[in-house]
Structures are given as C-alpha cells and as structure tokens.
Amino acid sequence: MGGQVAVGQGDGAVRAGLAAVLAVRVGLAAALAGLAALVGVAAVSLVHREAGAMEEGKKVKITWFKSQIGAEEYQKQTLRALGLRRLNHEVVRPDNESVRGMIATVRHLVRVEELR
Image 1 (cartoon, one colour):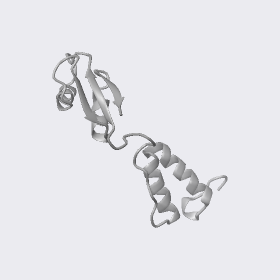
Image 2: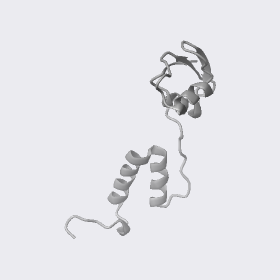
Image 3: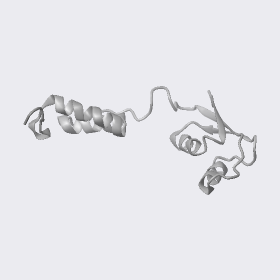
Image 4: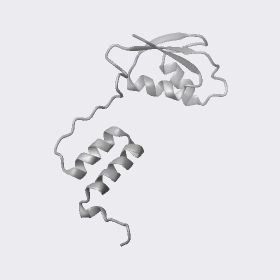
C-alpha cells in the first residue's frame, strides 16, 4: 500500500486531515463536531456565530435601490417580507441569521448598513 493509509487504522494525521477537509466543506462548527466524533470527545463547545457578528441588539438598515422588474418571484416576495414597499424605501431590522439570509437572496437589489 504505497503511501495510502486506511481511515480505520486510527492514525492521528489521517484524522487531522479529515477534520481539515470537513472544515473546508461544511464549515467550522460541523468540522469541530466531526473531529469530536473521530477523536471520541464526549462534548465540544461550538461557537455558531462568527466572532463579533450578530451581537445582541445590533440592527441593520436595508435600503431598496434597484427595481425588481425582471427579478424572480421569490426575490420579489423576499423584498416584501423584509418590509420594503417601494424603491428607496428603508427599513431597520434585527441583525440575525434569518434577516441575513433574506438579504443574501436580494443582495443585488438592496444596500445594507450596520447600525449599533
């Protein structure tokens, strides 16, 4: 077996390599959970948010600046769900994962400003 190592052999380097692949493929939190399962650690504390992002009480100001003509129907519905009613309309929303997901859906139609 020239240079190949089976995963079941318990080699620490293989486990570290698998953890690195997981980190790239599915994100840091899932990689830490996968590494914990590989090593056999009972509990690992995971941080689900990026450092400094989406802190308690932060808000974002969303401004609709580009027409929805030609946009997909789900993008039009997302603009409405954000509370945007017309061009140049601004709304303030909490900075959380669900709002960030909606913003990502219509990122080409809106401008976002982080507020404290």
